[in-house]
Image 1 (cartoon, one colour):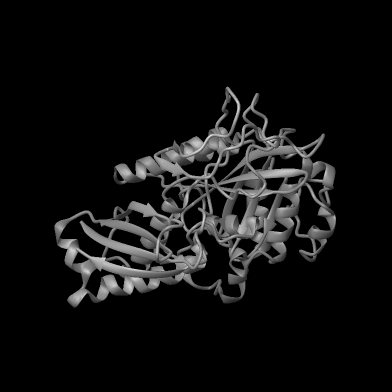
Image 2 (cartoon, rainbow, N blue to C red; image 1 turned 90 degrees about the vertical axis):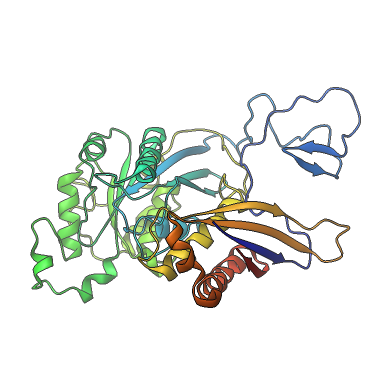
Length: 396
């Protein structure tokens, strides 16, 4: 095991960016505020009010903004390296999930939340589907996919310009028989100008090399899909395809205008005889329900989780194929600055776990150069995520 101590420098005490979305239901007895109460092993010095008028203690839910509010889970599924995490980040307008060109970067089902005054989207990014898991870790990843699939109110199937299929016959059959709302996103259409259709690999049966071919194929595969939206999520949250998909999922406003911005209609984008989607049709994607999370919640994961994912992503990106995917990063401690601290430092200790003893010197590198490079690379991402200056002090 290799251990790294991370010091997060902050000029002011910084609360966790992400915390559990649903507050526990509490019944307070007696009068007066509670102070210095321990909650989940964390000492709370500030007084706790007797009652939070913005929280419904009878249901455990945050009250809706009014009648007609909609909320539901949408699972994002697809083959590895289709850009599912990039799509989630673009949809919620935040860089929440780690993005990496290497397939199978995502190991867990990660929730991203987008809340408006009329709707709350709970988008679940899942690991890329593997047809034949090679080891226990991959088996666990596929269980995460199946769990997210079962819990979803709607499904977002992600593929690419080449119509890369879901390589799991059982799960693919479930997708084809899915009787709830479904949308298909054809990602990476910006590659169309870089594709040589005469190359042998592009002549493989079932492989598409134009947007029109991809849309037509997925309409045949999933005729029940409400819409098939071409996009290039790597271009960011303002990509016309991403904007159109976001408008559809939110139920507006003005879904038809967002669809027109996609350009000339491609046959198969909608069901036969349908030329566009109205706001009212889009609203049927999610059920009527009060929101399950606070307005400013982005996820149900905490900073520890995302810090470990960021460090692991840097490790995979720099080590290429020298380190297998079974490596892991564990955050051992996370301490935020306290009012009495002379230096406002957030202290974090992390452990890098590798599969074999022989991989330790590879991660460390000659004279510690590789672990230093991983620290520098991860620090930039952590500074962006935590909005704090980050300093690494490695030791092993």
